[in-house]
Image: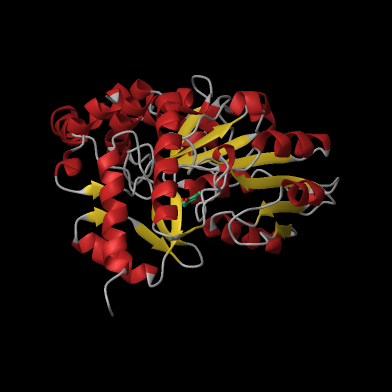
Amino acid sequence: MDPLLAWRKEFPILANTTYMISHSLGAMPRRTAEALEQFADTWGTRGIRAWEEGWWNMPVTVGDLIAPIIGAGKGEVVMQQNVSICQWIVASCFDWRGPRNKLVTDGLNFPSNDYIYHGLERQGARVCQVPSPDGMTLPLESLLAAIDEETRLVSVSHVAFRSSYVQDLAAITRRAHEAGAMVVADLYQSAGCIPVNVRELGVDFATGGSVKWLCGGPGAGYLYVRRDLWPTLEPAATGWQAHREPFSFQSGPIDFAPDAMRFLNGTPGVPSLYSARSGYEIINEVGVDAIRAKSLRQTQLLIDLADEARFLVRTCRQPERRGGVVILDVPNGEDVTKELARREVLVDYRPNAGIRIAPHFYTTNEEIEHTLQEIRDIASRPD
Ligand SMILES: Cc1ncc(COP(=O)(O)O)c(C=O)c1O
């Protein structure tokens, strides 16, 4: 008996749907509806007092629920709207006009991050994208070789969104620091699915969001910045919540808060933070080690069933390089995905990759078998 299945009753959608898409939108916890009601009640009954009674500090207090999931300390994670904003804040900490103006980005990075980096070219940045030879993996050596004494920032996706390939953050961070560069790690596809410890890795910045493995819903991204760097970083992408004394409403240049609040900007998205909390609490209760152990077992089951059906598996088969998603390249993958949804089996499709299928801690083996059986059935139908 799998003890994690006890959590199924906390996720209403699992009663009627084969939910294999937590890499894209994690299932909503039942208690999230109560949390959103709490938001409305607080607004409705406490009015403006809600700010000083908790709302204003929510970017930090909610970040404290993310911290144990990524190995950060209390007060070291602040909530933002999404990863793109977090990346923009990180990039805005640097002067890109000097000789150390190279930004190395891995060829598996999420496009949004690269759009932001290319925007920095106007300020003098030189963007060096290390290409992936197959669109799915990236040889560590080629990434390490791109990092040199002119590199300011190395941006790497811990787990690639398209292929679920796990990159060696420790080796990349070591090389970057040797060269005097900093590392921003995108943990969106890893945190809550595979263990990650930002302090042990020594990464300088980490970004992520809540929509996927953390089951926290949209509008709640997070940013971690290494504590000893705080006094040296002054993001140009800022706002009044980052001020040492925001309610003194001083005009002129900002006087940054001494703590991680310095990486905030304007009024926080309070309802999103209410809705995000229950997912984080559950992931903390379940524990990422238990999630990873189950994920390795179930992704292997998926691969075995796909092999049996002679589907092309595009995920890395090496367990330590495989994240939580299995990608199957079946003919007409996009149409198969649509038909699966009609049959109440939710997965997604990415061009140049295939059908992405992800079990999470609440998934049964029977759901995996059912998903593969339905794909076999659809794929074998005459056109
Ligand atoms: C690895 C990764 N980074 C970034 C993003 C985009 O994040 P956001 O929409 O919060 O900016 C995604 C979304 O799918 C992702 O998978």
